[in-house]
Image (tube, rainbow, N blue to C red; front, side, top):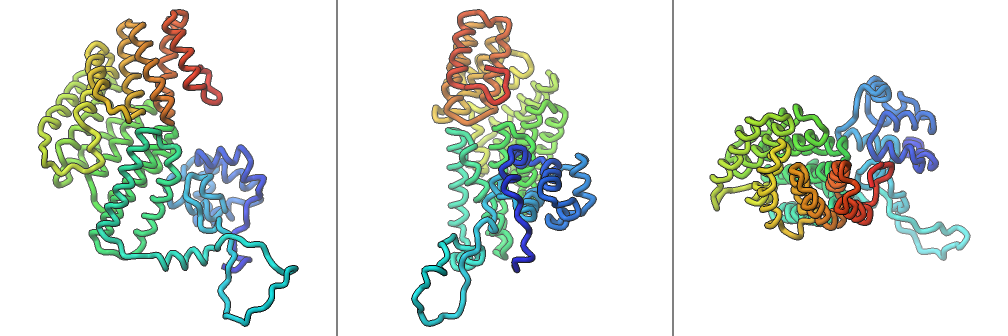
Amino acid sequence: MPEADRPQELPARLLTDPEMLHACRVRDFARVFRLVKTRAGIYPSMIARRCELTPSRVGEVIAGRRQLLHMDVVERIADGLRIPGHMLGLARRSWETPQALVVTEREAPQEPDPEKQTPASLPGPDVDSILAMATRTSLSTATLEAFRSSIEDYWRRDDQHGGEALRPAIVGQLRYVVGLLKENRPSSIQNGLYGIAAELARLTGWTYFDARQYNQARAYFAEALQLAKESDDRQFMANVLACMSLQATYQDKPADSLALVTAAQDQARSALGTTPRVLSMLSMREAFAHATLGNRDSTHRAIGEAHRHFEQIGASDPDPSWVNYFDEPKLIVDTGIAHGRLGEAATAEPLIADALRREDRTNQRGRAFHAFWLARTQLDQGKLDQACDTATQALEPASAVASERVSGHLREFYDQLAPHRQEPVALAFEARLRELLPPVSGSLHP
């Protein structure tokens, strides 16, 4: 691209401004566009042209009447405005690597002139393209299995440590696989790539959901849904919709949660070969939605359906790998949590306690999350000493995993202790909470 045609760079002072950094991090494009206009002199019509958007759409975004969530649009904004990828949660953009090498005809070697030597730099985008062509190989089923194996490893490390540190690698691999989809390949390989990309997008959405960054999570879940739709993988579409349903319960949108999980069940029933384990997991998510709405009879019915489907699981069922986590302890603990959400603490407590005893000790987030729910059901029954002891036990695994969702739950438990703040067990829990889970910025909680 000729130098005159390259988009102008944003001023360094804007790219390092805390307001711009925060706006990019949360993808608040109304604020990004306003800052670009006032600080860099790039007006809405220019923003529209550079980002391949219509001027009316840019105007609606600035006015707060429209959000930009699709990843293709986010990437066009990054490239059009020259916002480095990491600021928007994207992989490194190709233009971030400065052009340094130009291929010319070979000439006779000459002694270098020290005064004319230029400093060494990184390879430019043209070299990146050449290297990409040189390393491109035909994909095989073994390559797809390698991708799937890396995804399983991401999930395992997410359970142990949280997804915050993993996210850049996951997003980078997602963008790489999406790039592979642009080439013509046999349908079996192409569908496999769509499935891998969908799972990477869902995993990215999950890491944002676990960090309670809900707008970003929803954008990636939506991308995962679209990728799964491309290969007509209705079971996986149901899985993504179930994730979005769970997020809606956290956002205090129980009606949305129920609508999403109902859509997930519709997708699963319309798919060929949907397994009992998948149907059981979806019924349990339905139970969560009903419990959040306070629908006692519907919650109990959905719990019964979850157990009925689970009893039908056979040893040779072709379960998709993403649902293997839903084993018997998970069914039991989710049953307890559904009862706990409904306010049936006495029924919930022994179920959660039993599942917690069988919890894989490497799953730090699961142990902390389920211990919180056990403590909550104990507190609801007036068992203050037990509740504080259980919540204290949850703090150590919670501190070992980067999960604002779990940390937030434990701070909520502290809020629920308000009537008992001066009791010795409550004071001991508070001291340990302050030690292991320092307050987040701007929080009033300990």
